[in-house]
Length: 134
Image (cartoon, rainbow, N blue to C red):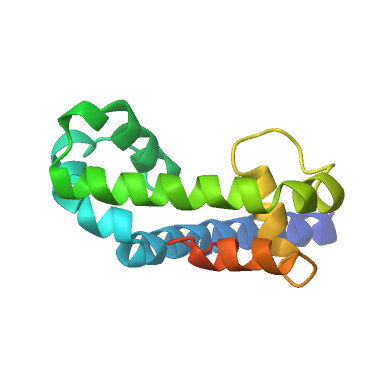
């Protein structure tokens, strides 16, 4: 009984540590991502009640008609970089990431996780992305 309690507490502590690390990583990424930097005022105005990370990007996309010119330029650049990755990495995704799943970001995460195995063109396209999740 006592060992089950200790194991349960250890599991809860590990979960708390992972959650804290994920939030810290999200905050660090937001402070270094060119889109998040260029869109800070827009985020503070249009997306202040939105969850951090992907939630902010989703909010910006939903409010694209209302964002500042600088934010729109940064959003367009990020979108172009992602489209370049899709084009340059299609064969790599088809072979290395066929089991990655269909949820948003799964293919990109798989490509990044397999960066050492991708083609040179795909590697260059991945390196051009403004945000590199690790």
